[in-house]
Amino acid sequence: MLNKETIAAISTGMSNSGIGIVRISGDDAFQIIDRIYKGKKKLSEADSHTIHYGFIKDGGETVDEVLVSVMRAPRTFTGEDTVEINCHGGVYVVQRVLETVLKNGARPAEPGEFTKRAFLNGKMDLSQAEAVIDVITSKNEYALQSSVSQLRGSVKKKIETMRETLLYHTAFIETALDDPEHISVDGYGETLEKELIPIREELKKLIDSAGNGRIIKEGIQTVILGKPNAGKSSLLNVLSGRERAIVTEIEGTTRDVLEEQIHLNGLNLNMIDTAGIRQTEDVVEKIGVEKAREYAESADLIIYVADASRKLDENDREIVQIIAGKKVVVLLNKSDLEPVLTREELGIFLEDEFPVIEVSAKEEKGIRELEQQLKTMFLSGDLSFNDEVMITNMRQKSALQDAYMSLRKVQESIEDQMPEDFYSIDLMDAYEALGSITGETIGEDLVNEIFSKFCMGK
Image (tube, rainbow, N blue to C red):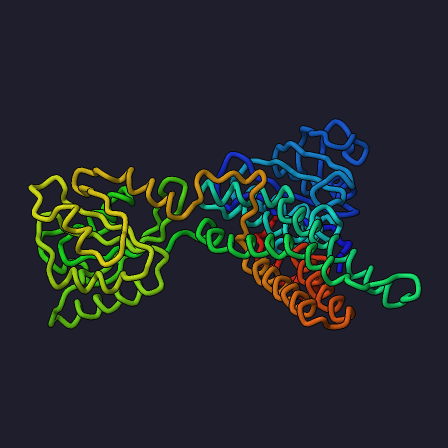
């Protein structure tokens, strides 16, 4: 699976910046840099993990003034000889440096090929490799902390510990079945079940963490509901920090959905402002109301904006039916005005015990309370990723579910007093499923598919 050709790519973003980096990795990395680098000494003779000032030359033409990092295998990211050319960060000059490298013996790297080589050379397991792209695409502090934790091997350590236990018991059963005269398995089912209980509990905990993991990684799908002119669009503008939605005194101004990504207290909200819920004969507005209902059905969170300056009516009753049984925060908006609707009246009106926060979108009051409420609802206190593992990868979640179901089958076999070889079959299935998370039991096609999703140069 490991391609030994020397590869090169631009490892920094393709935009004008202070510095650009062209990375070269492979057996011919030093021969290639010697052909194009001019400085005080040949870099193939330089000590590992040193940086050298000089120029990149394309024949007789000077391409750029550079600093070149020299790193020798195996103490590199890929496990191969690696050279990184730090040049000026203009888009054109970085491309010219790469072209010069390719002209002198390297081939263009495929997306994710540097990380793929790190995995294949044993520098990291597959869960750590997948964490690399998660670090790059992190959108908030929690996502970054979780990804860095996995990059340091938090998932790997838990999986390895479980696999060691499963392999030990599988080997014991297989050995006992091959040599029944010397090794007895009488009553072994009871011993095995005691050993498997904490593993099943750990698997369940990891599987359950995937819900919060998805929210941390992808954001909270949030829908704003309320009757017309309750202040939904004003709230969106306050949270986004800009005039994202048109706000007027005319009811029904918002007719289509408006989507905005909002960063709030370390969490990302994929916020959707919807048309006001009411009975209407306007064809366009009616379509907007139906869309609001559809989005609410699949939302992670609904923010119900109630108007403190108006009495509750049939439109509010319809909203209460829509939000029944869902995760909801109720905002009693326009608290800066003389109240017509009190917090107590609204609480009695609601069919479920939803948190109610008094806010004023106009004066930007109550927003901090909303932030703290969302943190309480979606995160278990202040997360620390030093010893807590949160699954953010759906491929890993699926493998954990497969392992869990295999161990449930072992439990059922023990309860039904089935022969011991039934235990070993399902134990090995669980072992293989967990191995797919770290990359020990997956095929080349899946490896290629995973790394094809990486960005170029990583």
